[in-house]
Length: 408
Image 1 (cartoon, rainbow, N blue to C red):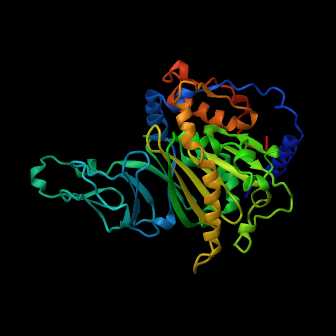
Image 2: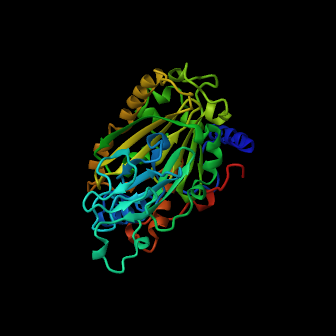
Image 3: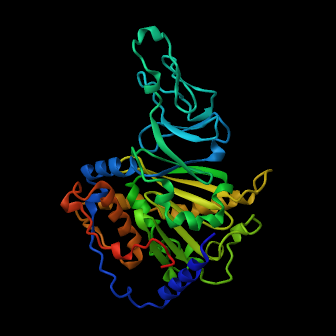
């Protein structure tokens, strides 16, 4: 669960935020973030190669591939990635590409198989990716089948959640999560159940919408009749972690407030005080935002579909209810969340039009919006500062404010 030493520091940080009249001493004025980072084709190509093709990305929940042979095809990075539950219980990921001439091993987006068979020429692979057989071996002289296993992709589980990474030798997922892994223990990641998944297409660069979910500065303008009625943005405590991860915890306006949409739902007794009675919103770099609660967990995922289009995917998980039908209250809860999501997306297309105009110079961020600047600093680190054009680079400012642990 959340480390006991971390609860009081978070509460103290929220109290400080309520009391301050300016940013804390020593916090710098943040330079503008160049607008071209949202529109420049060369920069977006660097982002695609060094970020989306080289990061740990949430792919699926084990409930979606519950038994050996179950598979799902993940296409969010532009590559068809086959994620399959092996006969040994291990979940693995491969490119959905036969080693012969590149034909697919499966054509469906999800299903169940006993083995993997090339749809074109019949090469056969085990669920662990090993080449088992091929037609007309006599026509492949000196052929060593052990050299032709499927192209594997890094695939790791955190609890019941499956992540993939196309980098050749990525840093382990647990190391990337850092303190998040410890703080999520109170929601029992190994016991979560899949509830619902839906994607929404939005006509803007993926960063335009992601930015909105990294701050609460917009609450009083956009969410007057919803979130702003119970959250007090003035007390939001923010933590910047290594690898681009971050957390913001926003207090309720009333200490005794309870979300009426969760009344009657199963709640985790193991949830910490922060999870149960405040509003922690975690960001796992680059594109996963999750405002966890003791009654359920939404993964809000931001996926690029090109320079001017993206999808926001919302996946819901619940505490393990022990079998039987899902609580019907979930239908109303998801519908309520969709209304809030509409509030966040309503201006995205217009913002995209604006950032492409000659009048747009870039983002001018305040202290409350420092998670956005942290995101961009990490992007430059991943691309490599030597590769980022000078006029599009972000000046490193926040390293002194990045912590390994909240307890410090």
